[in-house]
Image (tube, rainbow, N blue to C red; front, side, top):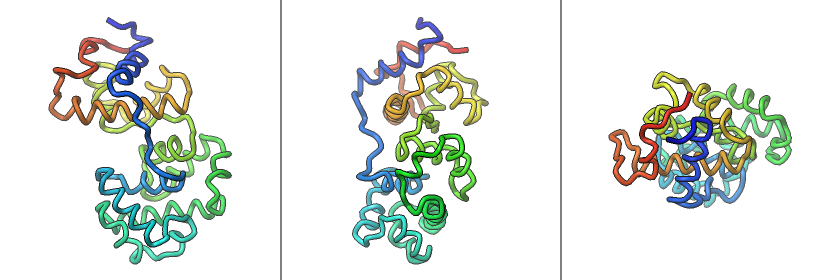
Length: 220
């Protein structure tokens, strides 16, 4: 049985050995990553790619262009991502904040401290904790661990966390046991998503799972 203090790193290395680097997050620019993080809420990435392609074709994949277009005109472009009226408003809220904070200069935004950036992002209507941490990690290269349903499911099933743990508890659990490192957080989250989609589904498929040997490991 792995030592408790090392089990997360052993998870990471085992998943990396099986799947290899995941090359997350897809996006040609930090701003594209930010847009994708909002659009991917409650949908799959294939649909997000279609929406982003629409924005590119309309020359709207720019903070100022999105800030200026009314939500009703924006919504049809992002229709493939689903919940397009809601997401249009959320995306507008984000770009309005971005333009007011740093005139759309994401490099300047990234120079701000992590704690204050996270607090400001969470204050934006429609930006929850998972989306905020995705923006921080993948677009702004800040060392903050992203927790999603896959992360929660894997850690609960391996007795690392309690089933009633909330987002911040799971995040603190992971960050307290991992080196504060953007590349590590990035790759580990992507690997947890991969194993969650392929093996650790709502109905677990443990046979053949790279983490099968950890089935009885525990963390405290």
